Amino acid sequence: MPAPHGSRDGFEEFARACQQRLYRTAYLLCGNAETARDLTQTTLAKLFQHWRRVSAAEYPEAYAKTVLTRTFLAERRRRLRDLVAYAKAAGPGPHAAEPSDLRVTLLAALAELPPRARAMVVLRYWEDLSVETVASLLRCSESTVKSQCSRSLARLRTRLGEAHVYATTHYPTGS
Image 1: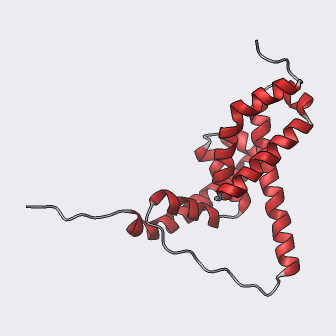
Image 2: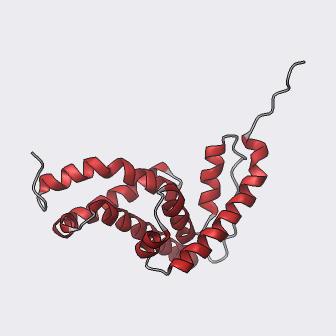
Image 3: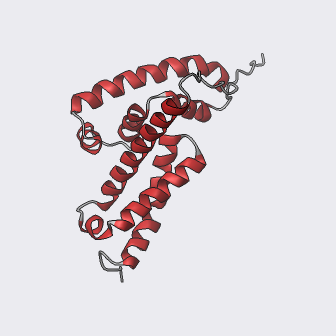
């Protein structure tokens, strides 16, 4: 028998059911396993804090994804403000060695996108959400989602175009 909505057991059941999906989305947004775990836990804590409202929502998983995305963007803005405040003269960090795995290369390319653009690409193409849904989640217009996704995909294509040499191995064919 499922736990009643609004109850602690109901939250625990919900958290077990959607934790992996939230983590996957968090990982794609952050590009880092530890940060993704922290983001997922922060999201679940926020959901627990407002569980009565969340459990009454028509689509609690969509609500959770909205909380996750907005938490990610808020943390990125906060980190950026801290970075600007404490390290004005710091230049760009050293680049990592070229990865040989296409998946790692894709994650690195995603990490180069600004947080909001990355969120749009992940939600639109990885989570397969509609333009309307992404616009609603991020509180922006549909045209903003379309233009940002278009620019972001062009940027990813350029980056991955350079990386395809490292991601594929060519073996000589025998005669």
